[in-house]
Image (cartoon, helix red, strand yellow):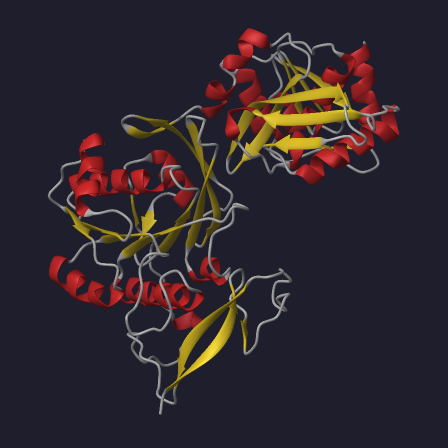
Length: 455
């Protein structure tokens, strides 16, 4: 006989406990447990998966993965080449950054090609969706909209319409009436995602789910949602900037950490085919200003040249401030410590601010040399040559270490008109062949970079 009991769940990782605890034993976070009522029973859990027997891996039929294009090449790049049948894709991002706009544009493109799309919205009314579609010039009869957040009714709608692609906006607003718990609770999130995953795998349809993010920038809800889905993509970028970065975090059908660059406009999200050109457009006007350097990052499968700005100023308080926008705060602290130890700088009495232009967050360690070059320039109040770029990782010893994909980085820098490239010592023969027409300056450590700056 089923009965209702109280359980406590961690909002970060989904860890279950019979009592409230301050620190989660699963993920180590503090004050993340919420109280929910769950139904305990002896009955078997319902599933729509058919019963199958175990087979040998060698006997499994090999099928070619066919992909469905979204009509947006930048989005296809992040997805690994397009949409795969039977996949569940999680799209996360801050409110208003463009998640719903992108999905509605994809729905319009697929509908034009003859596919049926079902857009289930738990946040907006049908009239609001209509207004947005008119603004985006989407008026396709193959796009169906639904405003019913109860997923128990979704299967009947799928049988009636037979769509190839279903979009759920958002997973925090839908629920299963057969499951206890409020919308957005840990139990509902897990059960709703599991139901959608079952529907995707059994029917071969493609499902998109939109996920809210917390103030720390992580997806709201238990961490296990990212493990359940096939693809996880995050929207990055500041709302005050026109540019948006769509970054692939997980992809079972392609490479991870791939990025797509978009520009928000009145017509929706426009893809940016040459992001390096866009991010360097405004630099031409102030290339001779101290505190600026160009780093050559590598995001996904393509190089990205982007400006790094630094400001070193005398501190007005008892302790120096360290602020970073676009790179990890700990990486900035590491680079400052290396400059103090190896170059004799006294930055303990200086505030240091570093910013990556365009609202982009760079995870590639090859930008270390560019960040150090920008801090050097601001500290000495002297600019670097305008057509010089930097690439290399800094070790704790101050050594400049080589990074992969140097041939592609050099080729991109040469294409964008840079005349000099400062990089770590040890360039290979193949990379040197790509360096024709651009001056290569090799440095062994951070002190060599300092000497180059003084020369």
